[in-house]
Length: 67
Image (cartoon, rainbow, N blue to C red; front, side):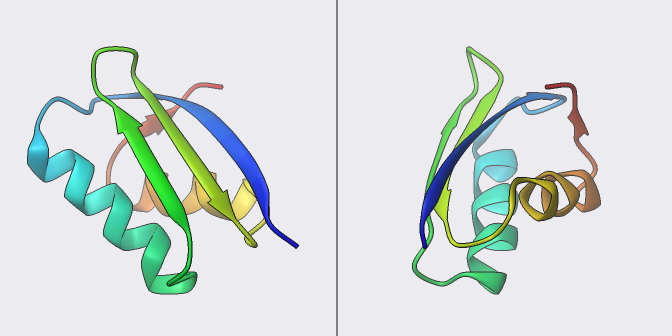
C-alpha cells in the first residue's frame, strides 16, 4: 500500500541534497515518487515504506527531520 509522507527537513540546499535524499528512498523502494522542495524544506514521498523509515533514510543522509 502506498502512502504519501511529507517531512520537514533542515540542511538541504542544493541539487546534491535532492539527489541524495531521492536515491536513499528509492534504494529501498524503487517505485517511490519523491519530491524535494528546497525552498520550503520539505520532502514528499509516495511510497510503501512507513513514515519512520523514510525519516530514518533522510537522517542517514545527514539531514535533520524536524516534522
